[in-house]
Amino acid sequence: MKHILVVDDAINDLKCAEEILSDIYQVTTAQNGENAFFLLKKYIPDLILLDIDMPGMNGYEVMGRLKQDEAFSEIPVVFLIDGSDQESEIKGLKMGAMDFVKKPFEPELMRSRIDKILKLTEQNKILQDIARKDGLTDLLNRRYMEELLNQTDTREEKGFFLLLDLDNFKLVNDTFGHVVGDEVLIRFAGVLKEEIDKEGSVCRLGGDEFAIYIPKEYEKEALKKIVRRMIAVIEFEVNELLLESCGFKVSVSIGIAEKPEDGNSFMELYAAADKALYYVKQNGKRGFHFYGDTQKNFEELKKEDKLINLIQLQRLIQEKGHESGAYKVEYDGFKRIYHFVSRCKERKSQDVQLLLFTVQDVLNHEIRSERADKGIRGLEEAVAQSLRRGDVATRCGEVQYVAILVNASYENGTVVAHRIQQKFDDLLQDNTMTLVYEMQSV
Image (cartoon, rainbow, N blue to C red; front, side, top):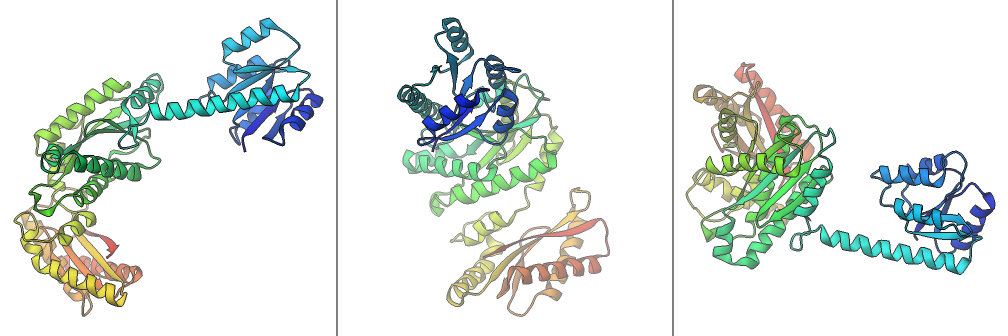
């Protein structure tokens, strides 16, 4: 049921309007402008019937405040006027009123005008939604993103603009055709919507180029965690569509600009993010870069990205075949165990947990060879002393170890993980390194 707010200082007129409309619409009444704005903080009506001649704050003043507030500016307004006042009608139309209803109210005429305006408003919303959406992915389009950022140009608003590009997307189209290419773009768009959710706006600029605007003042490290997870999820989800024999994987490169440091308008932020994206493309793809960062920052990032996370790990160990490449040879035996455990889980409904341990420097510095060797030896010993009979584990990188806990609940897995962390600290006796873990049910 559509909701109508009637604002009028005359109690009889309020009662009359409510009596005429309440069998069709939900009606709320307010006797003055201040009371109306109090109610507007609680809900947004579909239409406002607004009396012009009121004490304190008249209808024109209420209308002016509505148009100045983004939250209320799109609500259709119909002025209530006494008799025939051409001058008032002209002034109201110039301010943005949709129509007028004269007093005393004619029920059929009043309902007819309101119904017509509500239908017209609904049609306009549908057309606006179509105009701002990308037809393939159902994301917002470039026009919307431009309008959004250009509207915030004059406001002191902090935020991040991310420009995303799919690596090897041309190979997807060339190898599988545009139908599969479109499916990749749709899945990519779905991941972006799910990961960003209500944090910001996601749009497709064109082709395989996408953009995200997050209007929040994040610490860079917090944003990096979001971006790293997004990259991992995209790679995991998108590559499921592609055949394992195709010889390439789709990844994502991201350029990031800060608002207002790198610009305010769409074009300023786009230009900065595009340069950062180009930097990623020129340095091996698959990663992200802030426009204001130095080359050293980027190189440190690339080293850090040599670490994997659980999403990437699951993708790797679930792949069939024995192709050469990172982690493939080391995982051959472990993959067989993983698939065996998965089959056991299906047959016996056992809980199985996947644990990924990473040795880290407490100050987030790079762990070089000698320290890495010391750390991984300590981790191997801690794992060996802590796992139960039937659990399996293997090394999966310079400073990473993965374990499968059979017939273990998430709570059991947490206990084992904490036990390994404590053993690691006791064995290593080195307060410059720490052990972190990720866990997920298989």
